[in-house]
Length: 113
Length: 111
Image 1 (tube, chains in turn purple, cyan):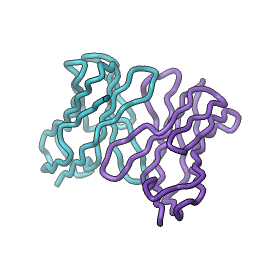
Image 2 (cartoon, chains in turn orange, green):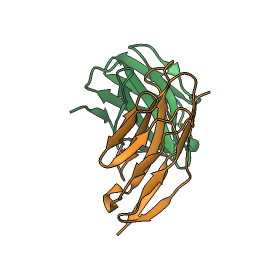
Image 3 (cartoon, each protein chain N blue to C red):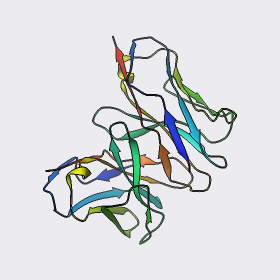
Image 4 (cartoon, rainbow over the protein chains, first blue to last red):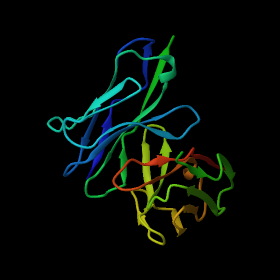
């Protein structure tokens, strides 16, 4: 079946450090891929998305590229801020089950001043 | 602004109680979902619905049921609450095949 695997957390970085959170997936067909972010005490918000191979999603300085050859969608940011501290979820939406999201286990990011 | 509203942020219920979690969306989305979120396990799909009065089981439906009598409202029901159902519950809605929008979550504690 379809699945998403994220790197284990928590990830602790100093402000202005480079961030990478790894995400790989298993799916049939051509899924859409998403990164969601959950700030403390809140629900999930869409951070960025990509709907086909080689697409790059970007938002708020975060980027992720849909790599079909490596089945990956790694999240990157060049310079993190304290306000980026949150839980990040990678997710896929199968092309055969539209609307149903399958999530990774989430990665907690803590950024220290 | 899109809105998915869950009726309670925090709930405390006793073992064996029947519990209703309500979710309302104002975006006229056809798809609605209930997930539970547990540390280290991410979000797991309990039930979803593609239309009024239609429901499908997700990955962990045991101990839960749902109701969708109107397009905008999707209710999650715990028939007889147990302590292993203590969790964060998240409702979401979407219009296929675009992204889902989430509510704020309901933190349920069963004692």
